[in-house]
Image (cartoon, rainbow, N blue to C red; front, side, top):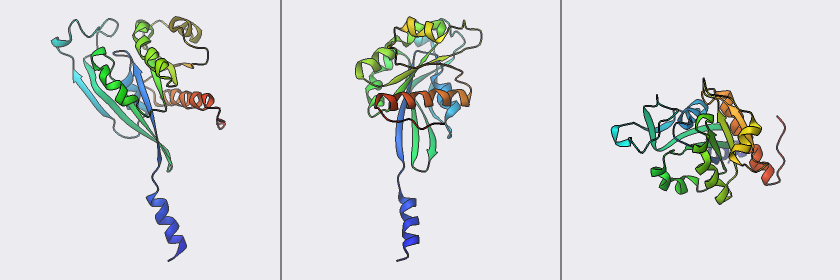
Length: 200
């Protein structure tokens, strides 16, 4: 058998490594938007229209214009190269869907916790979840139009984060801004594991 052809067939059959990253945070913070902006494929979304059944359950303070909500998860994919793919799983934000979190978190490399300065307390449950399970995470402050801006140090203090947890300001609508957040998470995971992070 021709060794060149054999090598080519082996390369075609090679299965890329898959990294799993969770996108978490409170209700209406921009998880679905982030997954959609960075995914190379049309993201799988489980969005449903908000109805009267959510009155008294879904707190719309600060996000009064929100009309839909994620009821299971969002899913997107980024291909780094032929050997590495990143899978993004956006978690539902409401308490009544928390039973899904343990399944989504299984095998995750780490997580991005989205924060909205108008409703900063909404990300406390996500921060607590990942801290308790020892899952590395970064906090990404979604800079909404018209929302009061706070510096990284102010957000870190307000959330009582450990000094090594990265905090990033970004815009979930912008693909490049979202990529910066994901790179920050990968670098954080590598540093926690004592691995060298490649430059650039």
